[in-house]
Length: 324
Image (tube, rainbow, N blue to C red; front, top):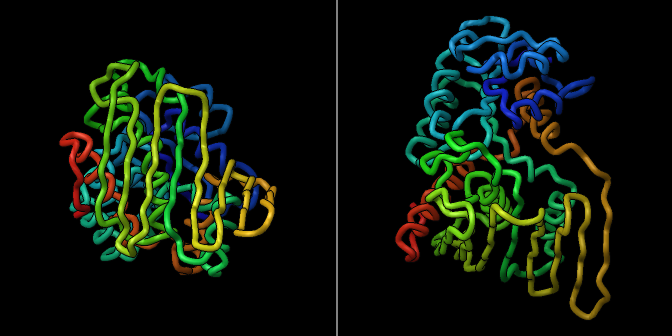
């Protein structure tokens, strides 16, 4: 069992705490760190979670073997490096960083310290996407021609003014940091590196100065094309389609997959539901305990930050941008 500290106890930090409650997760929280302890006092008391107000308290605690960062995006690289310097394994929520150079430095710090580095791309554990990847890697879909996706909702629309999730510096390019990086990470998992992006952004309703709607086209190094969109002010929408030379495959929800091969009727598969956030933490804990290979490679973690950075540039210039 990995004894860990959760750093940041906003709504998603609390989601992490609840995700690992009960047996079998491989990780438990023995400390929470927040700058607003009064705001989560009832939550912490109910879950018997001791609270500190300084990250250094977690780093200095010899009982804490790992830290889970659910903190403002710009803080991640320095916090990761600090964890590595204290020989703590570290799991970081997405986006991992806002700059690819910072991301590479943080990855190197963990590698040099021989600590496990995890990242919160829980889509990789959603049953429909796991099955989608298996089918594609088996070659059943033929050559992948194009990928497309949309992930939109209004969960971030009501963030209080002044909160870091509403700050254009912390959350640039509309819903990219909250939603878009999930799609780019999954595209990278399926098709490898992205060569070029072209983003167009609009500020239709929210008026925060960082846009609320964005559409992005992508060209992959292997020649495939892709596009995705996200908007921060609409009903919940989630779908991913992959178009191959033999047919199409579409994830309509976390557990529903529709496969339509050329010359055949569409086939719908309903898969057993899992808690993907818990599954991501379980994979992190298993890697620590068994020295298994962590399922998200370091180079993909860094590359997704580079893609995000290129999309942010493109949204500002309204021109295509090569991924650095």
